[in-house]
Image (cartoon, rainbow, N blue to C red; front, side):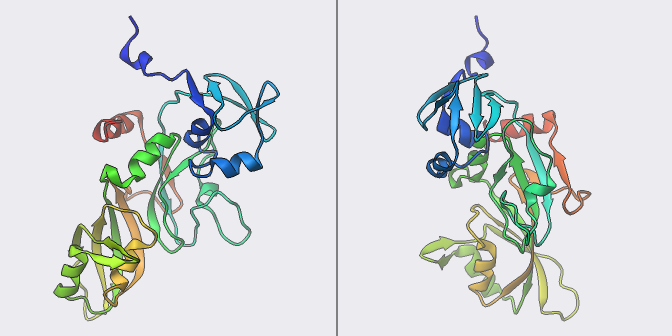
Amino acid sequence: MKSKSNQLRKSEEKLQKYLANSGFTTRRGIKNFLAQNTVTKSNKTLKAESLIYDNDCLTISGEDHIVDLNPELEILIYHKEVGQICSNTVTDEKETVFSKIPPRKKGKWIMVGRLDINTSGLLLFTNNGDFSNKLSHPSSNIDREYLCRVYGEVTDSKLSKLLKGIKIQNETSNFSDIVAVKKQGKSKNQWFYVCLFTGKNREVRKLWKSQGLIVNRLIRVRYGSILLPENLKASGWKKLSTKEIKKLKNTYKI
């Protein structure tokens, strides 16, 4: 009798899902990717719905790739610096986070969410698109924690509004928790830890701005149960161990 783990191993998959799961493109970007890149197997051009099999040899834009439908889950944590962009498109003007992490022999690193150019801190990468979607999707109810320096007069009334919810572009956003760091002197800058369960574009900054306050420093320190290590220097990375990944899989029922 086959073990449960063997029964769950995939032997075939549609090309579009494989490309997204392996980091070649996103699920939404499949159509554009295949319009700009030729994928062939045994000299036959494949379509998005084409079935591929474990250990197939695909040629993607002239490069050969051996299909691995059951890769071991890998997770890499990275300490993003201000000024770096969350894009795998290389430019002469801006440094991309992908240029700072180790390349993969099979597939691509997939970024879990993103941070804007002026935000630093914890970024996650994985080799598994399903895992990335699990951590990113609002239905998973995974919170993110940020340390932010706020300029302006912060009152209890403003904090209460930020916790109850603010309309931003016809959508309600809110912090699930706000903890003030002890203020030093009479400075108009004050540090806060904030948590929220969504990862909308510049959401933390927009929430504070709704109260007439400016975020002039923003650092993501936690994503779900994953913390930014205190000893991980800016632009540094670390792969999670097998034990750490097993714990995560149990936590998020993967």
